[in-house]
Figure 1 (tube, rainbow, N blue to C red):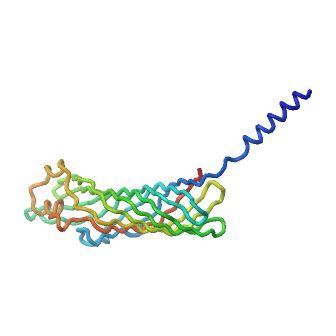
Figure 2 (figure 1 turned 180 degrees about the vertical axis):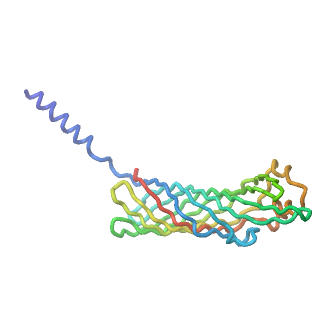
Figure 3 (figure 1 turned 90 degrees about the horizontal axis):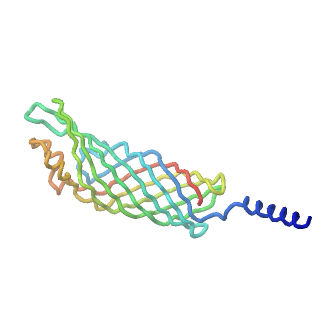
Length: 235
């Protein structure tokens, strides 16, 4: 009888131990997306940077909490801005419409200070890292000429400032609202890739729009203003 009692106690304590939650990790991971309020690039060769649009952000965000008020943050994010312009005339008959797409991939990391408010954290965050960017363009004329051209990828310095509030309805799952200002520094001149350069049409207006002189076609100081909503999980 005693050995059955011991066996019952062993099974009971095993089940109790199995049912306990694992210790909470200092690591969290999250997915974010949202709205882009503005994209500007004062040094870019556009006919007005207000034409830039549709740069919807998507990001994977990680964090490691060093102290209750301090953590290290990291993010991999992607945005693709768009703009259009009228390139000019071809022999006085054709008008070209150019639709540019400017994808950018960001990899950044940095500190975040936070203050506990209610069941969440109010945080201010600064990250720095790298930006990989390029562009592609779709050319269409009123004579039904349609062609696509691509450019080589380049690398620039990336900076991000973020104000956020993260609410924890449970100990492991959180929802965040974030306002982020993202800036690129020191972007280089974008060249057509080899395949696209060989397909340039014999038209001075279109050639100038697709590959103007390098001293007028540098991509510097991109500014993205985003409102992001994220869901995060503590490992």
